[in-house]
Image (cartoon, rainbow, N blue to C red; front, side, top):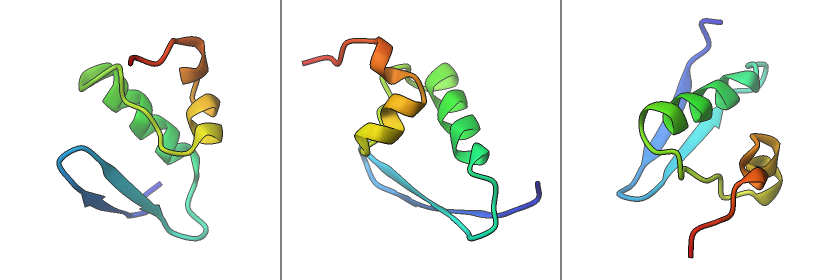
Length: 62
């Protein structure tokens, strides 16, 4: 709680920097909120992380 996140944002991507000692659950909550409020098709670039947040249950759009 109270830890800062840094972001790089492009037209079609966002990179999030989590500082050492910060809670990784922060990223999971952010992704969940973005999927719910912004775009359910949101994907993580890393396949293992994408699977970890539950996207493996839905087929990827072509």
